[in-house]
Length: 96
Length: 330
Ligand SMILES: [Fe+2]
Ligand SMILES: [Fe+2]
Ligand SMILES: [Fe+2]
Image 1: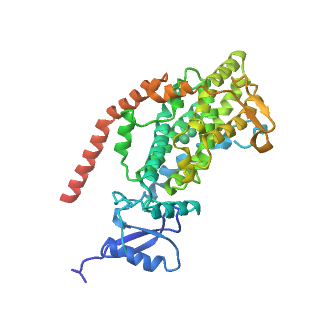
Image 2: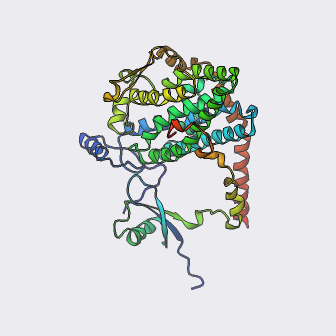
Image 3: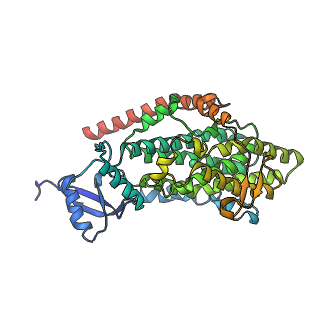
């Protein structure tokens, strides 16, 4: 098995119906994009789960570092002024 | 199974009567159109024009408010304004990326803005000489934008609708911070109240113009309504905005600069609404054609930003290329 070429990994995104975003559903191995799409259709849309598929080579996806989660995302926590409720307006105005 | 690249796919369509009828049937059935779906060339063109104009408006809209960030009177006002202007940059990005799903490039859109070929909302060609202008913009300009944008969340083109949902979630804070600011000025000293009223006087009519020409003069309206890109006409949205905003002014003791403004019981199918004065359409078209007070400054500022940023873009690309070469060599 050592000199056998690896079949690359693809991440699969399905759009349940028009109007919605494609959503990550899982991954699979396939030799090329066309085969990955076919396999994704066979594996992930057998029960009408979607009407459109995207496949992306897993190695082409960059992910943020979980160890840096705090430094990446915590700074948003104390910026309460980014939310509507931070601002005081007269009750009579109702929804704004 | 056929596959397609997301970018650069062949988008040519045979626009037979059958094709156009089938497309209209999908629209009428409230189906969303997605990037790889066949669509009439004119539908694509209309969306590119609308979405890119909207994107440019978000970006140019950062300038009149950005003008006051360093001079905000308190830290609380400064962080609010900074956060708002930052959001507007994000809105521009969401919208440019929605436009890119239609097969135009960001470079092309940027060039159209910088050369003056593309339009953006005429409202941003007015100056912001006083601090109260920041309140008036948040309250009125973002308020008018929300009126426009909420129905766009149901636009027939999926990526535009989804971008608008994200934008609308963020807009509420923009309007509230502006109204809060106006409220505190209106409750302040005589000078502060006068400053608030003066800003309202200057921003009210241009805000009404944001909804675009009257339905009788609007060249794009009918087809956009049929395609469910737009859900309400310019005049319908303008009326909703007037009806929502006049009581907000009254509540804080300010008044609209319009002598003809009167409550009319019979408006809006008997629910009542405000009659208002005639909009100065000459002024509107002057500003649209580039003769507003700030048109030149806005475009010059964008050009300068683009030119000054050239070395950064080039350096980033050169760095990325070098990293790639190193990786390949290793
Ligand atoms: Fe915005
Ligand atoms: Fe907007
Ligand atoms: Fe905004």
